[in-house]
Amino acid sequence: MLQTRELRFAYSPVVSFHFPDIYCNAGEVLLITGASGKGKTTLLHLLAGILTPSQGTIVIGNTNIAKLNGKRSDAFRGKNIGIVFQQSHFVQSFNVLENLLLAQWLSGNKRDGVKATAMLEQLNIASQADKKTTKLSQGQQQRVSIARALINEPRLILADEPTSSLDDEHCMQVARLLQEQSARSKAALVIVTHDQRLKNIFQHSIQLV
Amino acid sequence: MILQLAIRNLLQKPLNTLLSWVLLTVSVGIISMLLLLQEQFEKQFTGNIKDVDMVIGAKGSPLQLILSAIYHIDAPTGNIKYAKAKKWMQHPYVEKAIPLAYGDSYKGYSIVGTTKGYLEKYGAEIQAGKLYKNDFEVVAGYSLAKKLQLQTGSHFYSTHGTDEHGEEHDKAYIVTGILQPSGTVIDNLLIGNIESVWKIHEHHHDDEEAVNAAHDESHHSDDDHHDKELTAVLLKLRNPMGNVQLPQMINSQTNMMAAVPAMEMNRLFSLMGIGVDTLQYVSWGIMALSALSIFISLFNSLKERKYELALMRTMGARRADLLTLLVLESIVLCVAGFIAGLLLSRLTIWALSGSFESNYHLKIQPWTLKAPGDMQLLGLTLLLGVLAAAAPAVKAWFINISETLAHE
Image (cartoon, rainbow over all chains, first blue to last red; front, side, top):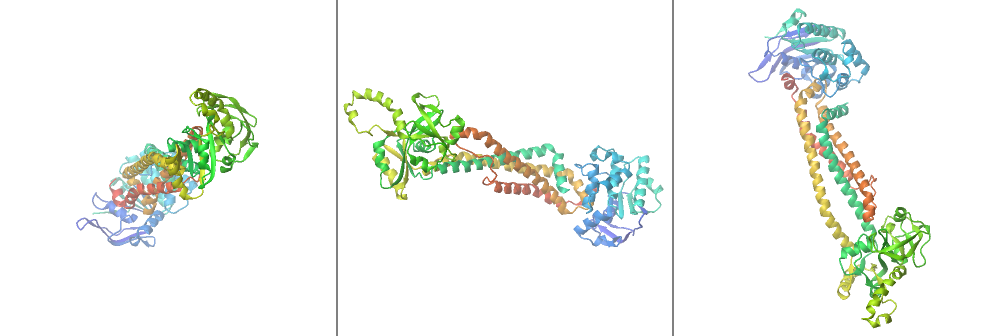
């Protein structure tokens, strides 16, 4: 599902990264760990198509996203990639349900309220659907952002430090949730983190050095 | 969905939005009101001077003469002798001459003694009753009849002068007919023959004559028309040469005054124009302020929303979507301001129209959609909206998603 080769990226001649090749199948989980400054976020942005590599290929499904230009990259990202961020950010003037509908609409899919509500129910936050996202607790916000990442049934889910600000109990919950949901939609899940606790849960991991 | 988001974003900052909206509403309102008033003023004023190339009256202010003789919104400049005026009414340059005797009123509305030519000039048609035939019979203009509830057969006593509390004459007028609405000055006039006006003032002259008798024994032996007076004469001339020569001749050779309505009205408009222009500049200023206010609130919110916008990009939004979003926010606000402004201008005019009508006998139609300049105003408002959003939108276009996401 996801395969990178000879991936390089340079912010400047001094700050440059050479990433190990990554491989992740549909329904599998890959953990990418490493200390700060080792290019974790850069790699995630490369995989998401937000940054363009200076060298190498990133193949998702059959598409080499390193070769996509602006508009097509945006469209591909919307359709095929769901991202869960460390800090849960939302479009503030919309409520929970509308944030999901916006994600559907931006990806080019139809706005489907039934499906969005079902997704919220799956994550046990359907009762919060009409609330503004700022009114939710951190745990609830994290669930909404997972729901948003999954709503378009992406082939690749990227999670950036999804658990680092959570206590042990919530960390376990979120990890299990991510694993369950990605397995359920047969998506490849790549988690970028320095959180050692996750290493105990997921077997496949790559460490950036 | 982008439109929905734009509206929500505006509502998210209600005070900023309110400020920009109020500024826009006020500026659009004032400009639209001025345009509408100006057009209707000029239409009404110029409609009434159709076929009047020149007015002869007593010496005084030419503008006053025009305002009183044509529009009946000012006091007359005085009277002129019929015998003397007649000479000019029969001048070869003159195509048509309409003598007017006015100065009396009923409840503030002028009673005009004139010839049938006056009614013909305005194309007046009888709506109810019939035309006046004898002395002390009048027809009433449509608006006036409605307001004073005059009907065919109504009696009333005129008062001397144009204000309501003048001295009352003791001879009653009778209304024989009501005119159809014409959209001109006669809608607010009582019109009868000249003889009535002369007769009602005869006893005044008798008093004067009794006093004067001692000084001037020959007075009574003068011809019949000697004491007949007119207030003004409306003239239509045969050729443009007359426009130049006749006023000069009358002003230099007689103790009467000739005034050209077109010239005087232009003078009046340009005087009013100073006020109108000033007000217009002020409202352009307010409009610029509202654009600035939109710009500032968009620009400020952009700082806070940078992450949000980057987030939308990760969900598949194109650069153009973000651009559209910001421009839409501004445009939605501008359209709302424009609509509210138009409504405000119409409401203001509607509220004022009563006083315009009773004070100046001007009928202003507030509920018109095809006011001049409204389309240009809309165009300008939209342009303003786009301009105000331009810089923030361009900034949104060039947001570096990776950097924005990484540094939060």
